[in-house]
Image (cartoon, rainbow, N blue to C red):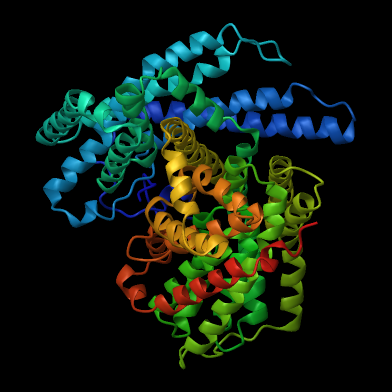
Length: 633
């Protein structure tokens, strides 16, 4: 899946740079209009993000310090959040960084790739134009509703949707202008053909019955995803098509569901933790933790492998985003590992496996998403996620010890006691951050959103003071990248929320529930089937789109069968993480290769023992609930 625009490569990799170079890039450089629009959009997005952080900090200070809570702060934060999501989605579109599956596109001919890339621009434009009138009607309908605390018209918030849809349609048209003329014609004709086919086949689809019609549209959804259409627009397009052609339900309902799905205050922790991850990298806090682990373990045979595992555990407790975690660790460790004789395949295999292993380390963005969608306590998820990750880390450490190269021995530079002591003292502020995050959330002292806000303030105050690294230009880039990445995630959540609602209305959800409930073996059989489903969907769709699609379907079944919701969520996240970082489909593996500057073929021969270890550990965690639930109160 492609998430990126420009690329500069590690070190200092940011989320927007973590993607495969082909075939996701546009066929021509952006025009002057697009560049100007991107600067304007980035500026607005950064202002909204900073306003969100400052508003939340003010709310926390008034509540806990002055004992005078701002009753309107959450309401205003939610309003800003919807606008931030739409501006971020627009920024991601301008960067050509909306998540899309390019695995199969890359295997086609160059001409076919150009056609599919053009379709990846045309279809979002068609979807946005189709949804725009309904979004406008929804915003007008919200004008008569006032917010409880501020007394503002609901249209102020709801107008974010039609504004975002209109601007994204405009950007898509601008991007299509500088595609090859023949490719643009083919793409437009192809999109028109699909639309005409659906319109002419409306009566036939009606005759199938609701469930059969849903099967047809789900099949079309996967066709669009495999063809490289951005996932958020594939979700939205299928939902709009189904409701318009089959269900005869006003499309304003979809706009309302998207608004609701994107505005949950819990999801506000997503951009905050993404920003936190970028800040700890810019300020040097992540590098300090990694260097301490290198000093402590580097003299052991294969010690840098252990340092890599430990670094991923620690850094995952700050950023919450796997790409940011790998970008913080690999550039520091890989050069020295390579100098000691470690093979590139082993290095990138361990990096990918450790990223999958640490998916449940708080503050995991996927855990936040699954808690919001499935209605599971995020504090309990954060508490439950630590021990399963440690179990998997122990298994990876054993495999790494057995596989460490004979030449990759203890050829480390001796570290003096004084230097090690200074390094430990220097690392204390960075090491305190993940501990504070976990304690604050686990003990119920603060919500995930509040902790993320306080952690940002802590990193901005301590990082430059202690580590003397704080380039303003990199901070601006980190803010703009956070807006784009957050918008991409939130648009997927919003579109998938609308699609999940459509599946429920169609009755398809009930049939899936009956089918999964009928799996032989009761709860044990259902757990095995769930692991397989999440592994497959994790490799195709990644964690967040997979969970927003499957969560509303499978979590009620698990609860009906007596499976603890927190335990099931941990198993689901780990399953999707393993699928995400498993070749040949898992895009996380290729992201690890890009960050480590390693040819993907090098790791294909060495990654399987690590993945087998993760799967074995996953099954142990799935069938021993105590591992996930032991620390819950």
